[in-house]
Length: 146
Image (cartoon, rainbow, N blue to C red):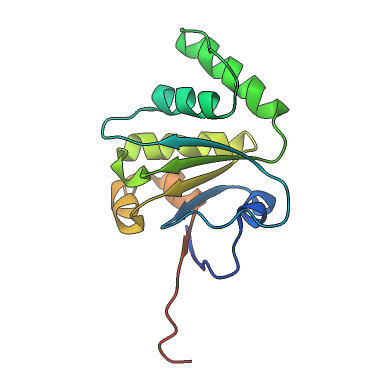
């Protein structure tokens, strides 16, 4: 985990660096072209629900009902999307277990941006070392001494 100053950050730069990002607010797209699939978390949202929202946002169409088939179809759609960024608004509403699974999408090549209350996301994922080791927290930094 790293804490990073959000100043100058764009979605294009986040995609370029890849990985899992936790932000208070999604930055601008930047000059590079990116494909953004967006989901909005709700209390008790799980990975299949987020996948359905991302698929709808990306125009993927209906996914198979079975969990494994759904994941395979979504993975295939992700591989065909250019410069893909998966965004979850209100990510602080997700349980730690669901947040931890977001790292798997980053490992498949998409940049994952979790937008929400950064401190609540941090607390929810403290017991998930896989998340904790891979996430970058990009926050606005106030300059107090400089």
